[in-house]
Image (cartoon, rainbow, N blue to C red; front, side, top):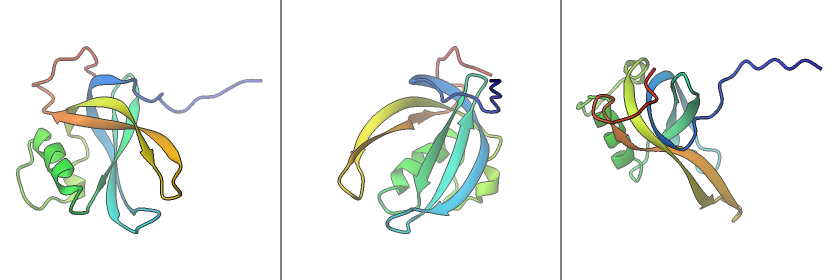
Length: 122
């Protein structure tokens, strides 16, 4: 059997300089909360990161935009594609709506690309 792989692997845990290559809009499955999903990638791999457009999600989105050098209070999602930043990839456990424990790999601790030390530059 021949295997054909058309996708990069997930980024390993640690700090990475990444570029936003896709931005999609959607709504959460359980509470219908709007979000944007950003694909963050470099030569090593990628991670998808959701940013919920809710009151609790505002500080997270604000720190993400600040790391991108965006200081405006209103941003078109089309402006995000192609921008770079440094992120830390980490695993986190959480309880889903059905009370089951799950884990997720996420991007955290956003920094401007030029301020973070990493060997994962692309």
